[in-house]
Amino acid sequence: MVHYITKYYVSGHTADGYVNFLSTNLIGINRIIVLQHPSSRVKAKILEKLTAPFEEKEQIEIIESTRSGEYIEGIVMRKSSVAVLAEQVVQDKIADAEYINLEDYLLSNIDKKVIEKIDRKISDLCQVAYSHFKKGLSIHDDLEKIYIDEMDFSKADHVAEEFMSMLFKDVEKKEKQPVIYERLFGTNTADGVVNVVEHIIEPIQNRIFIKGRAGTGKSVFMRKVLDACKEHGLDVELYRCSFDPNSIDMLIIRDLDYCLFDSTDPHEFFPSRKEDKIIDLYEEAVTPGTDEKYAFEIKRLTNLYKKEMQSGVKKLKEIKPIDLERETYFELPKNEELESVLQKITTKQ
Image (cartoon, rainbow, N blue to C red; front, side):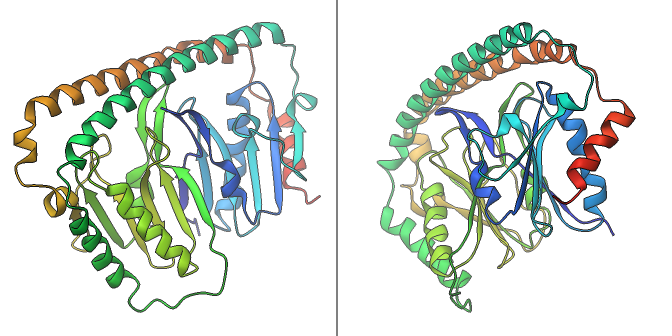
């Protein structure tokens, strides 16, 4: 039996710079292994090899890479309580984690100064991208203000309260501390803007597509639902916005088989099943005719903020050829080298 594989990001390139939410996803994991090696490709190869023996036994979570869709940065097996991570996704030293230096197992003769020079070039491009994203967010705030000034917040609150009354109607409160797993369902990468929304929502029965405009309360709506989940002791997978990580883009409540997500550009999706529902906060709580009344200004600000976002993504795309060059300095492990590493990881300590 092959179990379902969940894919998500724990880090991203945002208007707040590089963000990392790894720590919440390791809650309850007893054995954490960190793979150390300068090559993303080498670590990804080992991580991919590890998925096969586990996916026959349990559900696997795959941590996607912000560098490239060709890599992964970690795998988490909650039933076995094991996580194996590539070192680049680990920002702070993890107490009691096993650090495995792959260079002890793999033949290598790398000029580390060359790699450090390439890494500085990549870091500089990221910083330029972040400055564009930050400027884009500032422009987006002006766009939000147009709609905020036309919002009837009492109507938005009523929509949220009505939804929560339905959602928690027969749900008993659990006497436990809920776990909130913070993640991203996509981000800006060297491959462009990517997301795994369709993959994440596929197995969920009840899917709420939240529509609206900038500033119409989509994130606030989800924050209210999140707070109610905490009060009921329900674990939640919280997906933050890859543009503004202070904002919420999705909630997955597996105990209730529900997901709510911001289904607007640049991750706009539409219902495809009869159980799917739309909540449109523009229709519910914004003064009718707002789009038309401020059409010129909305278009102007939208174009300006998208231009900054595109400039930022363009800088990240410049990383791709540099990263490919970087990886040419490393050879993939030979079968016998690979087996020795896999044996160390899979052997209980």
